[in-house]
Amino acid sequence: MKFRRDGRILKFMGISLGVILVGILILQFLQPIAIIGITFISCGLVGFMVGLRISSKPVDYFIEDERSVRIKEKAGYSAYGVMTSVAVIIMFLGMVKISPSLTPSGDFIDGALVMWVIGLYTFIILRWYYSKTGE
View (cartoon, rainbow, N blue to C red):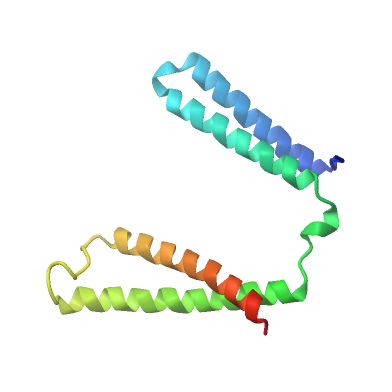
């Protein structure tokens, strides 16, 4: 298997190896916060694996054509519309007070998290749908 040796890939792999080294040093010398060291090591390993995966592909593999760019734009616009609709529904339920179990909590962070997750999954599903149906 052939690997590319671009400056960008080598820099990314070097940063990943540096994160692994920092995680090992934290794990070695700072025992009370060992979970941070383990987190750094796992993030560095994931970054290193991603770097290996990207370096094994040719440069032209990552260039997108116009169709895939248009599909992502269309899915993004639709996901934004769905997120806006969900935000309006959450605010409406907060004002109406139908029942205590149906009204959202006063903490807006919970609602924002729900909207983010819904928007993310909507974007993924709509991107798949638009790529299957075409223009």
